[in-house]
Amino acid sequence: MLFRLFTIMAVVALGVSTWILSSPAHRPAQSSQEQADLPGYYLKHAVLTDFDSTGAPGMRLEAERMDQIDHGTEVALTQVRMHYQAPNGQNWVIIGDTGLVETGGKIIDLKGHVVMTGDSTAHVGTAIVHAETMRYDVPASIATTPDDVHVDFGPYTLNAHGLKANLKDRTLHLDSKVNGRFQP
Image (cartoon, rainbow, N blue to C red; front, side, top):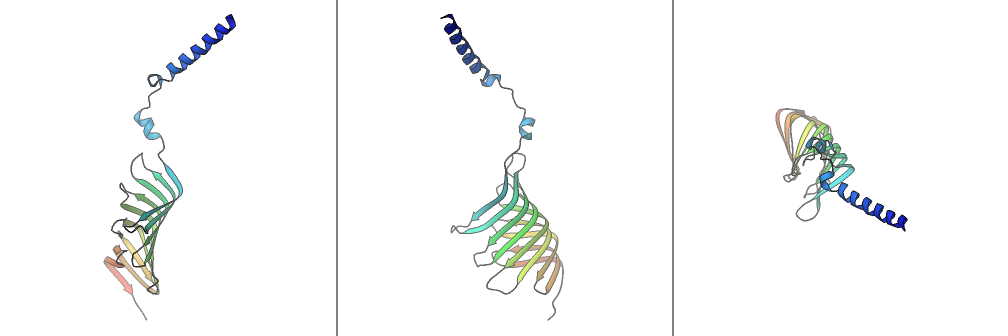
C-alpha cells in the first residue's frame, strides 16, 4: 500500500514539474540576432508559374535553387531560366547564372552570362541577346540592361550599349554605340 502511494505521488510530482518547466516563462529567450541567424526557406529545382489575366501561363521561372534573403521578401536565385509566352505566339527564354526577385515579385534581376533568346513560329530565325546583367519587369514584360549587349540574328551581329526589349510587342531598342554589319 505504501508502494502505491509513493508511485502515485511520484507520477503527480513528475506531471507538475513538467507543466511548470514547459511554461513559456521558463523557456530561454532567443535574441533577435539568433533569430536572424536561422535560415529562411529555400527551394531546390523550383518552378514558379505566373498566369495572365485569361488564366493561360504567361511566365515560368525555373531555378536550381531559390533562397529567402534575411527572412525578408526578396529571393535569391541560382541557375535561372525564365520562359515567357507572348500573346502573339512569340516564345522568349532568358537564362542567367544568378538572380534576385525583388519585393512583390514584379522585378527579376539576372546577373552573369545572361542570354535572351526569342523564337517565333511566324518568323524565320532566332534572335540571341548576350549581356552581363538584365532586369525583367514581369507585369510589363520588358527586359532592360544598361550594359554592353551583343545581338546575334542568323548571320548578322549587332553590338550596342544598353537595351530595352518589349517582349509582348516584339520590339528591341538598342540605346547607344550601336555597331552592326549586314552583308548579303
